[in-house]
Image 1 (cartoon, one colour):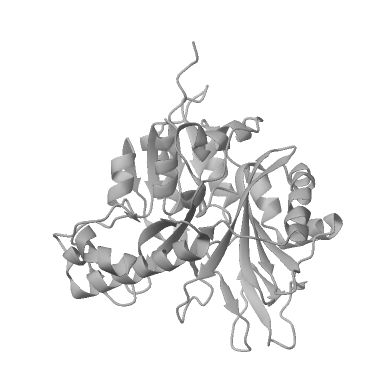
Image 2 (cartoon, rainbow, N blue to C red):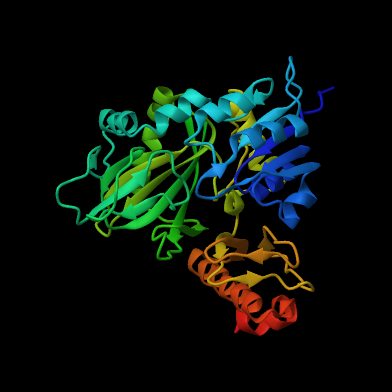
Length: 392
């Protein structure tokens, strides 16, 4: 008779997708995140909203206290720990909250290595993988260069470099390359990598965050040569870094079929929403198995194309008190909640017969959410009001 799985503490800036993935895989979860939205509260056995913000992340002491309240550290560990965004630039904080819990994710030293530009791009050179030109001091000519925060995620840490930008450390400089943003989702067990699928991404820019993550759709179709190059590089990359669990690689693909590898995201990310399944196809269970050294061969790609899109407030909004949410909307804000301009509102999903159709549908739903909130009319999101627009 198999033992009951350990309950899991989930820590992420926005933890709903991981909480849903845990539920699909049959795990009981306690959650610490910044939002405490309706979905996360429903999915989690317990949850705590931790002070902080998207830009600066968690208040460290508050996160440590929340972790202890939700999932007390012990020896032997009685809780697992899975983390999402928010700790890439803070491996020392991960080290603290991992004590006395079974870490199902990359170790702090792996985060440090993968997010160290000198190590990471040097590794790509050793593996023969192309990447944009990188500098660690500001270039004399700023045109065509980006500045990136070390350990950043979600695109908010990226900006075009200009002569007025101050440099205060914790940054590096990357020559801008044109192309289509593509992401490769893969599993790793510390020794080898297993390719799961490809997605296409797009930004949702605003004046302060021109490269802010907007959404993703799968499947994405790549030239066979590019797909083969990345697939062949997974195991050497995993062997050198020690990556485990669900990770992703971001790259830019140009019209000529050339690619530049941009970064590795060493934790489950936004594409979890568009690749996840139920039961044996639930990626959360495959993530944990890979963290414990077992790559599963039983996972299959979704049969239909799917897309997700983050809705950001364009002005000051207040969620209607009588709002009725459709099934395709996640990260549901509490009725009556105020939402600041530029803040994430929710996530919308869509499925279709092909990727372009799924992308069109999810962007239409994104616009409809903003229209409903701007009008203060929650009924605009009911199924009958949407049917004509989405099928017409």
